[in-house]
Image (cartoon, rainbow over all chains, first blue to last red; front, side, top):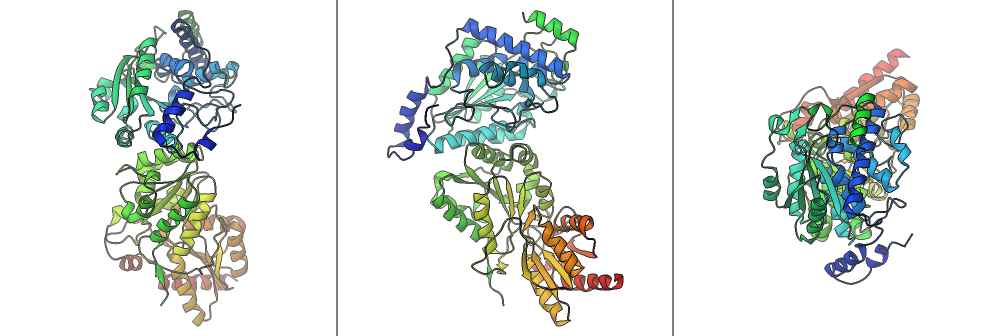
Length: 304
Length: 316
């Protein structure tokens, strides 16, 4: 493990911006995994989906829909964009992924396991007594989990705190917060949206998994969010709208976000809830219902 | 006449001292920095002060994120907003992951006065004490507030520290040392014990002095660490004095009285009396008027002690 250079950089008398440029340059390739092709990332996203379906069916409860919709987003972050180190989960300079929609824990656990934070076999312990993989994310039990979540609306505020700390400490990490669209019903999301722009946090990216379904039904029927992208723009965010299953489009938006200075970036990722499993796609029933063993088999066949 | 000092001012000044010593101290407020006195810190360390506007839920989340990143955040607002307004944020983002966030709430109790019921924090201690792992401190005066803030800064884990609005009588000496989790014996006595927190400590001492003249020798404990409570001191008081009166500027349920009663009932039952707000809200008025209205004065404590001592003697 390389020594943390932050301890020395703090004492160096240079302007913050100069330091930022130099550390950013050094970080761009720091502790990144092997470069994957888009096709390989596509295969990985499919593997995450297989894990998601299997672990939730095995647990007998959980939320498959919102995990499946976020598979590409999480794949790009963990296997392309983020600098992180599974052997050193608390590495001070790591990029942070904060899962605000904590019920999508299975997609995060799958990515963490595939990254090497813990064995893939451990995924089958989801939601069981004594497991490190809690029903909703728990930063105290799971290596690589940055925030305890489960009550919606809280992750963006947490992400602001992490981003502010990065700025104070002159650490070049970036903070990625994944929110659900139904989650945007929570007032706290907009308190945070206002604050992140006010604090000019260009090291913060909010990604909204816009799958258009919340527990009770379609978001437009339960609580209309539109125009969602306009809302983020009007709150002072640089805002992209992308197809949340299009890997190059996600990568492109995240790369462009790095060039945005003086404001945070929001990526509205249009997705399909339950993506990849025909009978779960666009089906509100699978927001929070586990597949039966038969359904799991059928789903896994589709995800071959 | 006892001297008085502002607990809130002591807070602001202590923050500056802490800020000078430790670059990881950061302070958050929700548009009340002029009232909570965090503005004193903001003036000296603008880059480490974050005014979150009128958005307490967001403030608690930001504090959690800062704590998770190695900072020691102090988050301040009025006690009513610091608890009820953002209870779930404190519960999920701070208490469950046991993050190092120091919530320092000013304007506790009904001594807030004229602002009325919406601003009277009478449930805050109940809410704070209900959170597993939280340390809850209610300093009795400005000296104790300063020391408690220092100790909180150096003790990992979440804290709720409740301060009051009015200037408060000084009951501790300048060389007072705050020990977390330890009740302070303010006065010795063997006939009964008054266990008090916050501004009620001064009232308890006044009551004890008056009772002395009637020949009742009262012990007075300052239970400034409400949680984890000093069970040993409570049991000792119950055993040695045989009668207890608790005094707090809070609802009778969920605060000091209940916590003491739980210890007493389990280990050494003795007659008790609770000086606290009964199950009701209070309207606008001057602090002294409201404290009198709700039975939170030295005279009320005095009468409670007399009554509890009578019960003790009848029982023996």
